[in-house]
Image (tube, rainbow, N blue to C red):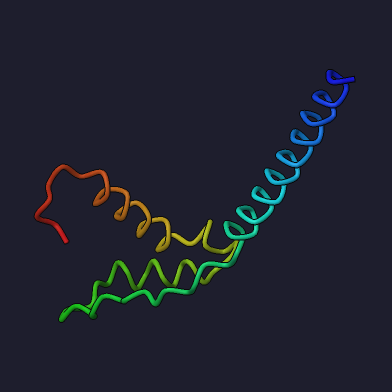
Amino acid sequence: MKIETDMTFWVRLGAVLFAGMAVLVAVLDAQLRREAPQVAVATAAPASEPDPLAAELARCASLTDPALIDAACRAAWAEQRRRFFSTDRTAP
């Protein structure tokens, strides 16, 4: 009789611990899924000289399929790649 009582105690204790862990996981999951507050992103001040390459890239970004065949866009993208992969860090 004593063994059955001890076994019942351990089964109940395991069930309570399992339920407690389930509640803890649910609460933590809800906290992690809560939408993060929106943080305002500071924008950089415009440079004294506007970059013509940036303006051309912005124009090309607004185009859809014609941007693929637009020679000016392809030239601007080539210049952007050249600047990006360049080892000369003095270029803007």
